[in-house]
Amino acid sequence: MRSPIRHLLILALFGPFVLFACRSETSAREIELVARDIAWSQDLIQVEPGQTVRLLLSNEGALDHDLVIKDLGVDIALAPGENAVIELVFTENGNFEYICSVPGHEEAGMVGQLIVGP
Image (cartoon, rainbow, N blue to C red):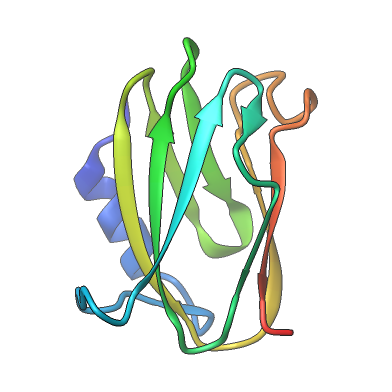
Protein backbone atom coordinates (compact mmCIF):
# COMPACT_ATOMS: atom_id res chain seq x y z
CA MET A 1 0.00 0.00 0.00
CA ARG A 2 1.29 3.46 -0.83
CA SER A 3 1.79 6.00 1.92
CA PRO A 4 -0.52 9.06 1.96
CA ILE A 5 2.45 11.19 3.04
CA ARG A 6 4.34 10.03 -0.05
CA HIS A 7 1.40 11.20 -2.18
CA LEU A 8 1.53 14.65 -0.62
CA LEU A 9 5.24 14.85 -1.34
CA ILE A 10 4.72 13.75 -4.94
CA LEU A 11 1.90 16.25 -5.42
CA ALA A 12 4.06 19.03 -3.92
CA LEU A 13 6.62 18.45 -6.68
CA PHE A 14 4.26 19.30 -9.57
CA GLY A 15 5.70 21.59 -12.19
CA PRO A 16 4.10 24.81 -13.40
CA PHE A 17 0.78 23.15 -14.26
CA VAL A 18 -0.52 22.42 -10.79
CA LEU A 19 -0.17 23.99 -7.37
CA PHE A 20 -1.66 22.95 -4.07
CA ALA A 21 -4.35 25.32 -2.93
CA CYS A 22 -5.02 26.34 0.62
CA ARG A 23 -8.28 24.88 1.87
CA SER A 24 -11.05 27.29 1.12
CA GLU A 25 -14.47 25.84 1.69
CA THR A 26 -16.21 28.56 -0.29
CA SER A 27 -14.08 28.81 -3.40
CA ALA A 28 -13.12 25.20 -4.21
CA ARG A 29 -15.04 23.28 -6.85
CA GLU A 30 -15.61 19.74 -5.61
CA ILE A 31 -15.58 16.95 -8.18
CA GLU A 32 -16.45 13.41 -7.18
CA LEU A 33 -14.53 10.67 -8.99
CA VAL A 34 -15.59 7.15 -8.10
CA ALA A 35 -13.77 3.97 -9.10
CA ARG A 36 -16.05 1.02 -9.60
CA ASP A 37 -15.06 -2.33 -10.97
CA ILE A 38 -13.46 -1.47 -14.30
CA ALA A 39 -15.12 1.97 -14.65
CA TRP A 40 -14.75 5.57 -13.52
CA SER A 41 -17.89 7.50 -12.61
CA GLN A 42 -16.74 10.22 -15.05
CA ASP A 43 -14.58 9.94 -18.13
CA LEU A 44 -14.42 13.71 -18.74
CA ILE A 45 -13.66 16.41 -16.19
CA GLN A 46 -13.40 20.04 -17.31
CA VAL A 47 -12.05 22.85 -15.12
CA GLU A 48 -10.94 26.45 -15.58
CA PRO A 49 -7.38 27.68 -15.16
CA GLY A 50 -6.86 29.23 -11.71
CA GLN A 51 -9.87 27.41 -10.26
CA THR A 52 -9.31 25.47 -7.05
CA VAL A 53 -10.39 21.88 -7.64
CA ARG A 54 -10.98 19.36 -4.87
CA LEU A 55 -11.10 15.82 -6.26
CA LEU A 56 -13.08 13.56 -3.94
CA LEU A 57 -11.84 10.08 -4.78
CA SER A 58 -13.51 6.88 -3.66
CA ASN A 59 -13.31 3.21 -4.49
CA GLU A 60 -16.78 1.66 -4.42
CA GLY A 61 -15.65 -1.49 -6.21
CA ALA A 62 -14.50 -4.86 -4.96
CA LEU A 63 -11.05 -4.48 -6.56
CA ASP A 64 -8.02 -2.30 -5.79
CA HIS A 65 -7.81 0.82 -7.98
CA ASP A 66 -5.55 3.82 -8.33
CA LEU A 67 -5.74 7.25 -9.89
CA VAL A 68 -2.75 7.96 -12.08
CA ILE A 69 -2.20 11.21 -13.98
CA LYS A 70 1.23 10.54 -15.46
CA ASP A 71 1.84 14.07 -16.78
CA LEU A 72 1.30 15.49 -13.28
CA GLY A 73 3.00 12.80 -11.21
CA VAL A 74 -0.26 11.80 -9.48
CA ASP A 75 -0.46 8.18 -8.28
CA ILE A 76 -2.93 7.45 -5.48
CA ALA A 77 -3.91 3.88 -4.58
CA LEU A 78 -7.34 3.10 -3.15
CA ALA A 79 -8.31 -0.25 -1.67
CA PRO A 80 -12.01 -1.18 -1.75
CA GLY A 81 -13.96 1.24 0.45
CA GLU A 82 -11.13 3.77 0.74
CA ASN A 83 -11.43 7.50 0.04
CA ALA A 84 -8.93 10.28 -0.65
CA VAL A 85 -9.03 14.00 -1.37
CA ILE A 86 -6.68 15.94 -3.63
CA GLU A 87 -6.88 19.71 -3.83
CA LEU A 88 -5.28 21.35 -6.88
CA VAL A 89 -5.09 24.62 -8.78
CA PHE A 90 -4.25 24.35 -12.48
CA THR A 91 -2.37 27.43 -13.64
CA GLU A 92 -2.32 26.70 -17.39
CA ASN A 93 -4.61 25.20 -20.02
CA GLY A 94 -3.97 21.58 -20.86
CA ASN A 95 -5.35 18.08 -21.37
CA PHE A 96 -4.40 15.36 -18.92
CA GLU A 97 -5.30 11.69 -19.18
CA TYR A 98 -6.16 9.86 -15.97
CA ILE A 99 -6.18 6.09 -15.68
CA CYS A 100 -6.32 3.20 -13.28
CA SER A 101 -2.95 1.51 -13.71
CA VAL A 102 -3.90 -1.77 -12.01
CA PRO A 103 -3.04 -4.42 -14.63
CA GLY A 104 -5.87 -4.78 -17.15
CA HIS A 105 -7.97 -1.86 -15.86
CA GLU A 106 -6.76 0.81 -18.31
CA GLU A 107 -7.20 -1.65 -21.18
CA ALA A 108 -10.73 -2.41 -19.95
CA GLY A 109 -11.69 1.27 -20.13
CA MET A 110 -10.67 2.95 -16.86
CA VAL A 111 -9.44 6.03 -18.72
CA GLY A 112 -10.59 9.63 -18.59
CA GLN A 113 -9.61 13.13 -19.64
CA LEU A 114 -9.12 16.14 -17.38
CA ILE A 115 -9.34 19.26 -19.52
CA VAL A 116 -8.17 22.60 -18.19
CA GLY A 117 -9.59 25.52 -20.15
CA PRO A 118 -12.16 25.90 -22.91
